Structures are given as structure tokens and as C-alpha cells.
Length: 144
Image (cartoon, rainbow, N blue to C red; front, top):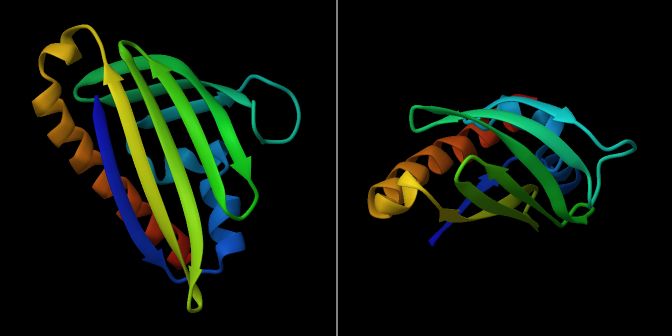
């Protein structure tokens, strides 16, 4: 199992950071592995909302499903993504720090198939991808 933690301070109010980061429709703007997302359940985005996903990671194109598993406005959200032989759980936790927001990201993955054989190498590559993603999230939000 892969378990990674990251955090970054974003110079934006907590409410703004949550509104952007907790909405999967914005993911392609900051998550380099997302090619496209399409909401498949009707209604507003919240716990239980499902999306069809197309992604590219580690040289592979993968189709799958993303579901919001936790949705606590302005504080916490979590996603479960099933794509190919991977199940990934991502939790974003937000906290006001000064005039900005500290966002903490926890990513847990259970590789299967060929990915299970190379779990150690995979963990390093996923860490690099996630570090880039959280830095990109900061940049996108601070540029407004």
C-alpha cells in the first residue's frame, strides 16, 4: 500500500480554496493525471457524486470512476478513484492559517496487476506526481 502526505500554504481564503479544490470539475486544471472528467450522477457536487474519468499516468491511459466520499464544506473532502488496476483515495483537509489556507493532501493507493510488482518504484513516481499537483494547485489558486 502506498500512503503519502503533502501540504502547502495557499494565499487565499479557506472558502475559496475549498470551492475550487473540492470540485472534481476543476481537477484537470491542477491534477496532471486527469485528461477528462464527466459527472455521471445528477445534481450538485457533494458526497456520493460520481464521475467518469480518463487519465494518463506512468505512461498508461486509464479509464475509471471517481466518487466523492466525504464532503464537509470549507473543511474536508475525499475522493476514491478506481482506474485500471489502481484504487486511489485522496483526502484534502483545509485549515485557515493567517490570511491563507493550509491544504493537506493524503493519498493512499492499492496497486494491482503489474503495478503491484513495482510498488516501490511506483510510490516514488506517485510522490513526484502528487508534489507537482499540489504545487500546481497553489499556483492556479493564487493567480485567481
